[in-house]
Image 1 (tube, rainbow, N blue to C red):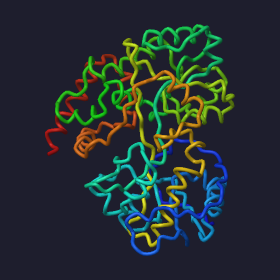
Image 2: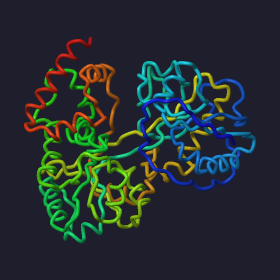
Image 3: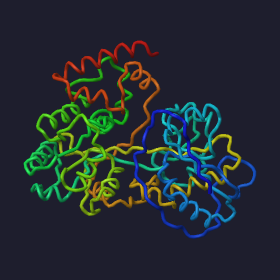
Image 4: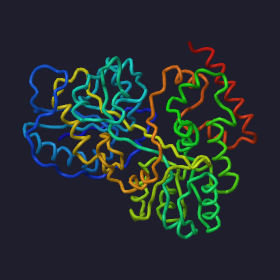
Length: 430
């Protein structure tokens, strides 16, 4: 194999998953579906796979995947891996210049109506994979252009030893019970929950991430375009903001709220000096990698209210896409199918498998599912929602505006300012 690395300068968006090495697969001569492409369907030749996971290119993980793939398809000459650090920004430029590999991760900013300009339909491949999560997420006019690489949910990642030390004997199932657990952790000398305000991006959890499932409405964000005042103290946004402000006011979060202590916080949670995160299951392997024993880390749905009924989100990671101009679609499809089903990437990343029939390998996900939350599958936001947010200069999924909300003296006044920006931007977007 060959390794290549992108070096264009742009603002980086880091991957949300940590992956290790995958296992071998048994040799087979079964061909992958050729989809809509004519000509030979035999899996042979070579392709380029462009990925944001430069770490897996560097540490040899993708080499191991390729080795197993070639055992399955002996006529494959080479899978060339190109790792790009500034993936989102660089791939936008390269797609515009028609300078991409055969298989890649679809950049998140491409509207579904434009997918066909850059990517080949993969309906046949999608059907061959069975019942998939987010099967139609990257689709337009009946054509599927992307296959999800992994699925995540959000909840409370916690250190069982910390809970035991604090005398917490049962998992909180209501918001009041959650606050009580935080009080016990604080009384025991631990940081109850790291919100990582200084890192900025984790603050998105308390806003648009939370409202998509706490509201019970997967289309909640898109419905914001119907009103001039989407931010209210007593709606899903206001309730989420109130929770994180309460955590700060009661001293349940890290003391240093202004430095980026993200990396250090993983060691704190791993070592039992801190109790919890409110993040996705992708962080579990990172906490274990920071020194925690696997059996000491747990995961439960976030109890955002006192109803005792819990929703939890299902969120898509990147989607595999195949270049519309690829000269080897059979091999490209076979590689995507292998990455989803056999490589070990899904399991090592701590993902929920894209195929609904498969059980997650991560033990913590099994614990999470044992609490029987009502899963709500996220849906794409409309271009109008994105346009209004951009014009209002509200950094949805960025965390900065929630940092401001955390610091505000009066929540309603802060929300009124957001509504004023939203109203003005909404009037200018048709």
